[in-house]
Image (spheres, rainbow, N blue to C red):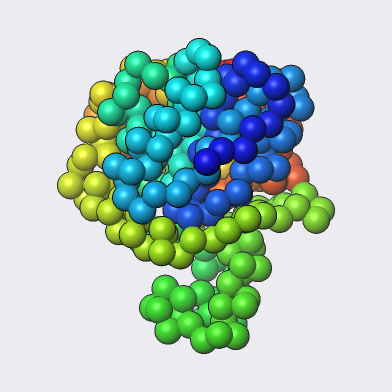
Length: 254
């Protein structure tokens, strides 16, 4: 299951986050296709295991890409890109990680702390109830707007993260599995197997601390070209002050 933007040849594959945030990169895919005048594959995830998602992505690439593509993975999609390339190291040309979650457990606790700094007292209480799985129905209604505030620096006017379908079952199944791969070191092992050029684009204000990505890569001798964006949160393709430079970087790499 994919959404195609622009015309063939399709040289770039966008991989959404979540897990389960299906359709969240649609606007990014449309804009990137317009700017590059190339075809973009928006790879939509439908499987409920990491192994299933890897094989699904493989089929999406071989069906629609006539040459080695550039993979652009946002958030959880950054991890999926790496896990995919760890198994299929000769399939893709470049891998671009955007808003990548920490690669080592020691940085995880910082995510919530960074988010809470951006919220009011009342919003923080709602956010904490969500973390503790005791959120009320009224809390749940407020979570999307709270996450927009906690995860971003300054969204463009009327810019919102549009998700065609939020699959909570996929989130729970996949993320539990993925977190174990971080803990046992298999995630970093996948990095060592890739043969593609590796790039990281991370906002200074992303709640996912950039040190949690850069330091584990450096400690394991994994080369990565890094772009740190000022006045930018978790989704640079929506950020008022970082959007242009973000797309400039993508165009230069692609």
